[in-house]
Image (tube, rainbow, N blue to C red; front, top):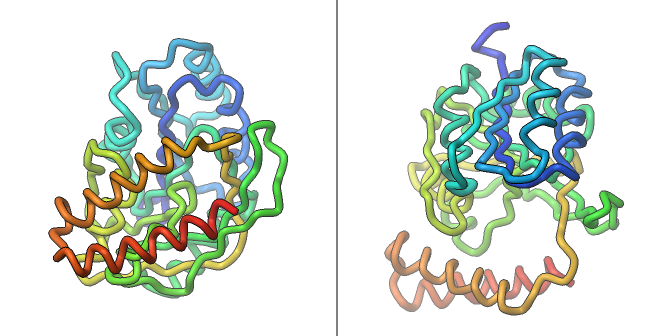
Length: 250
């Protein structure tokens, strides 16, 4: 396999025995076959590890990394990124699912755009894996200032060109994916969205109000502490974030 076209798929797993096989099979079913899948088990205590080992035994393109204890999704993804051999980095969480043409469509489109970061539209599915019909579209282009108004980039839809972004490392903080995309775009890169549903995102039932409030708190901290936005600008961006969140969850 050529590292210039190889796609490295980074999949963190923590206690996902019910969903990990579906995620793995969605990668194995890809029409683009030049990929490696790095599955990082983040200290699972259920049957995830035996399932991952079985999958790796069936397909030599699947590699496993077993962390000694639960370190969080950012640390798990970073462990995979560190071992990745491909020019392109794609992210797939262990409870999400790709459509068969996802990698082929995205990499062809990405190469035609010469973009550092691409993402696609996605559809919610419920905890049982049934599609809900609720689709989150992908804007054609996003700059840093656009992304500050809310994270419209689903992590499991993202593909990076590491020849442009370098070997990114996600911060071990809440909303690590959002912080990573912001850091890439802050350098003058743009994110390009392919508005096709190529990923299914598993949404847990009944997201608690407390969780939404915690996410809002983390977002505010990103604005003020990480991005160092002025108070008026942080309020402006947060208003856009809040309105977008209402639309996304209803």
